[in-house]
Length: 586
Image (cartoon, rainbow, N blue to C red):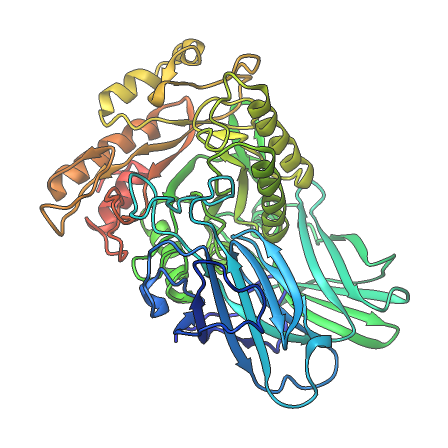
């Protein structure tokens, strides 16, 4: 069984129990059962956290299954305190019972939820945990990202992910405990904002201790009284004053400085809860046509990353695989990734924080517009921002991609309202990061203008974008897909322009005949290297761009346009890729 480290890396307790492993499993295609006492035929065994479509689950069934069931018997859960049951992600709508008692319901396939199961625990004997998941494979009005609604993956869509696909785990806490932590870097004041949210019976007399370390050096030791169950505190860091010394304390891909944290919840002298965490000091902002990192212009070199693996689909094979993906992106010369149509596992964000890799976080799309689709999108996007707000690696939020789910932006006011509403909602939930309302084309409310252009001719790309005067006419022209770059009433206001999708060069060195595709094609390693080098030279040297995002990191099923094969082996030497990415001689 692959090992996964603590699943919630910014709120860590010393004692926890993973429930990953073998569970009883059943398909319920006719949805004949609604409760755990129904006579369910547990005809399969599944390895959690892998979806039943994945080979790693032990089932590998990619047919349509709108309803599935899980069951696991737990040992004695002990006594004292509260027992919390956590699910990293379950796609799509889950109901959870313990010993026949409904303990949780959650809708949304990419965000976590927690159940306090204490009152459902029986005094003696084993505990029976049952999960029912509904995931209609034909429902286009739910956020589904790249999961195909056709039986066989086609075009740019991939196999479905049904049910549990991230870690399930238990932990025991006291009657009052720290439920959430939120870290906010305050760059101008050289401060860290710490927001502590508690849960439980105790509401008065609470205090919080926060300690921050940089390596072995204690930076802050703060204690304050809580007012209610949600308190925000600014913690001043020792400011060395000199830029060189200041820069040592700032987080960036080149210097990913993290501050280790310990947060202690007390009532008087009694310790109620202790958690470990981490944070960082960094800022991301927009100044005219440049993206700024820590107050200085920063050129983005991103790669589009779908986050799929051949044997395990959206679930990484192991924690080491997540770390390796971060290392490979850096080894190929990129300073960031655009996680495409996926809310990635928090363990990936942990490694991006620790090793130094920027992340653009993008909401998985629905594909049919309706009030219900938008309410689902808003709920899940809000949960995703709450989950990932404190990760320093996350620098941009992207609620929509290529008008997916809002296909009539030029003609229908309701579709335009949806994009503008999500943009402003995101800015309200997080005022510290830029937001791209709709990436690729048909932009309205946005802090960065993202352009998608898969022209495989470097000379045409250079002619289209390099001349300064082109920016005056660029926005009156149609781009790939017949789309305009900005909607009427939203002219370019000088925001940074980033080529957020381009390239997509297909090269499959392992077979001469495959039913695969890309936006252009190379037939030899030499031709692949030459085309990649020439495309990257153009986008690196185009002054109009504040950065780029190349498609893509690794081959993903029928798409063979990755720099890496699906198993993460490089198609050409990593050194060649890195030199071309950075536009330096190899």
